[in-house]
Image (cartoon, rainbow, N blue to C red):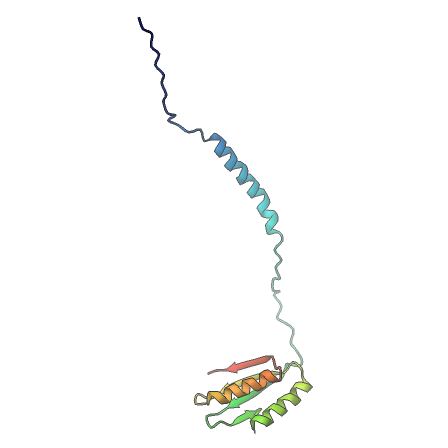
Length: 133
């Protein structure tokens, strides 16, 4: 009589995911605990319900208007390009925080507009606005 042994090498039908779930829950608890501590570093400046204080001396904003014929006006006075530069330099000496608004007509030559903006840049006038309709 022959004695035979049969070895059964079966595959495991189920995976044991209990250790993986333990790891996921531990990580979840760590994130839940540390997240509120990270959020407390946020600084907010919330607005108050009061209106802002009125400035008794509002800044003077000078207007430069360019028309279709190429005329340059500074505060309603017609000037040339050189006069504009000298008058703006004098205004800049009086007020280092000089504010200027440039308004050009629809038909204004772009070169005139570029020369005015270049003059403002040369004089280091930082507060420049462009008026549009």
